[in-house]
Image 1 (cartoon, rainbow, N blue to C red):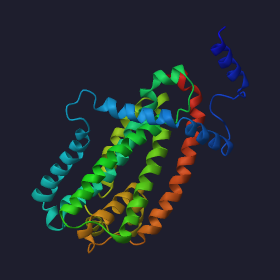
Image 2: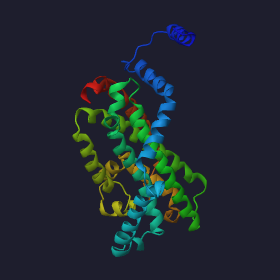
Image 3: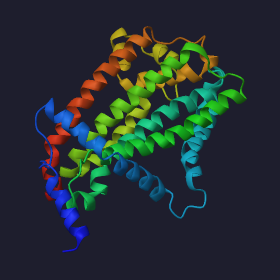
Image 4: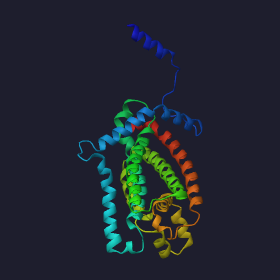
Length: 301
């Protein structure tokens, strides 16, 4: 045995024994999972870069395609709803209104869809080595966050071009809305990615969920229209209990400066604060469910 091999063997022997695999326990297990994930920061960064590169591999336009889908959706809704159906007549700066909602919704939808299939998509790694499996849905969230950043820059530039750049305390809505999307997107991605290992129908159900809930949130229609059509206070509260609805409204409140005169739900800061507290609890609960289910990932895959 060479001196290098001897040194390596001695270094390994000096390392303390450490249990591999998920830790049980709601408090200690959560802390162990967090430290495991933090210890794999470089791997998480590498997975995010790999996912972004793989998505646009051999593409001539590369990351430009990140903008194509939301811009195509913006064009469709602007022409179909704004011009043909007349929605733009009652909504000033209709393009900003639509794109603000689409930016928030696309971030959540991409995080949810990519996160759900993330563990199955990395089955080769799961079966070969042990590592905290949470990094797979987290890498999907990181990739979605990158695309969200690109779309956000376009949205900000559009507000500058129209002379309605948001200023002041309205940015508080943006911070809270982004926190809501990250919390709920991460929580659901963890839970659904684990379920998807055992039941592959989950990823198809998520596609239907995303399609339906797109219309449950005020992305392409205004809160004013919903409030005028639905008079029930109970239905208003139920509608606003959807955290993504609050996130979309938060984005519109931030970037849709021309809509300041339009009605918005009362106590938005309070509602968003409650949604964040619930989101933190949901994230913790979903991570613990993920930790319980990941024990048999390798066998199921």
